[in-house]
Length: 100
Image (tube, rainbow, N blue to C red):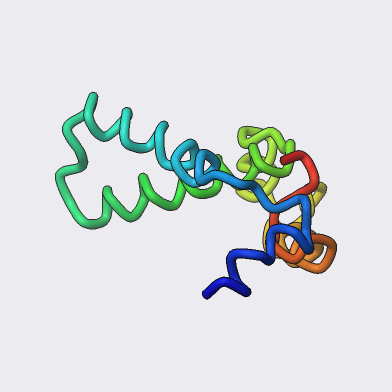
């Protein structure tokens, strides 16, 4: 257990707090409270998928709207999100992009 806690000393890019985790779900929770949730399982899945895509685009400094229209129109100018995540995980051991 102690060895795991000391990992932060080996990689100074690791955050010392969990504010990032909390901020990733904050917008989702606020929207859910305002709207009262969804009426169906399909609606919940749709909301969760778009919220996840939006957050991921924001993490990698991509315009969510441009990314979405690129994917829907099949243009292919934007990189695939999984390739960005994989590249970031190779650079930083924690998988976060360097903007944190």
